[in-house]
Image (tube, rainbow, N blue to C red; front, side, top):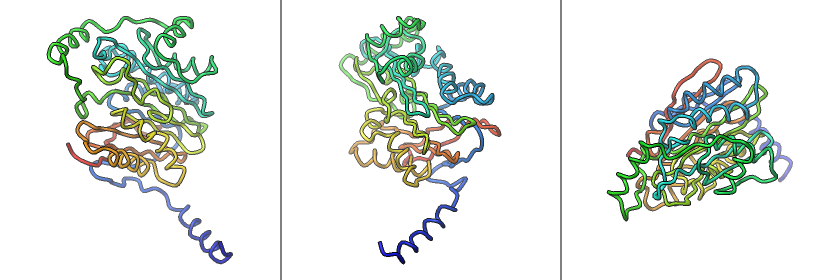
Amino acid sequence: MKRRNFFKFGLVAGALSLVKPLKGATLIGQSFEEKANGPIVVSTWIHGMEANKAAWEVLSKGGKAIDAVEKGVRVTENDLTNRSVGIGGRPDRDGHVTLDACIMDERSRCGSVAFLEGIKHPISVARAVMEKTQHVMLVGGGAHKFAVENGFEAAKTPLPEVKKEWQEWKKENKDLFKKPEINHENHDTIGMIAMDVNGDFSGACTTSGWAYKLHGRVGDSPIIGAGLFIDNEVGAATATGLGEAIIRIAGSHTVVELMRHGYSPLEACKEAVNRIIKKHDDLTGLQCCFLAIDKQGNIGSYSVYNGFNYALKTNSEEKMVDAGFNRNW
């Protein structure tokens, strides 16, 4: 690059760096890009409100984001009325409740469990994998053995009322593998990301997965880079929705990398959603949603269809926020 052009480029880049992301910028529907100072915690869906309160108990006292997100999502895992997370979740097609979870901290350390049965808090097992082993992911029987050996509490699943629902479903769907309904069975995760008072990020994601899925199916939630990704230099992202589609674009990693290259959280989430749309001829039932925070405290989210919202907690506010979306359903 010639010196004159290089100088001109520097002036333009410098000017652009002074432009702040717009607060309240709308991208189809009720889509707002928030900005917060100090500790921040956001999580997917309405059950994120209670989870955020638990996380805030850590963040408000100057605690670390990694402790906050683990404590937060444990609330949802422990909610016996929640049919998409934890031991209250719906089983797979064969009647097994299989749980998936992952966690990631500001140092890019991460842990994950998948296809785990009979353990009350998979997110805490995932953290133990991160802190006590040289591995990132344990699955199935190996994950269960590790959990038992490390003293994690067992739980009997499915719950009686959930088992009854499954038995009724099975009678009506003997040979049918049902695709989930938009914004109904797709409430399949709690993804939580937080920034603590030191500006450090961590995230957690936990689910019982797609209701009545094929036995052995694992979605995006326990996969680092798909359901969750943290880069402390840039920000954090998490995902919810149809995991198979999110995995195809390494969704949460894609969002964070877009933010690295100058996209706002809202713009990055929107671009990730549009990439998913481009890769699918049939969007029936294909709800995918992303939620992100950047290093400056900007927050954004976007989904394929309307109906996705997230819970936000900061020093000054506590509320649900509707995400932007590509299309109505």
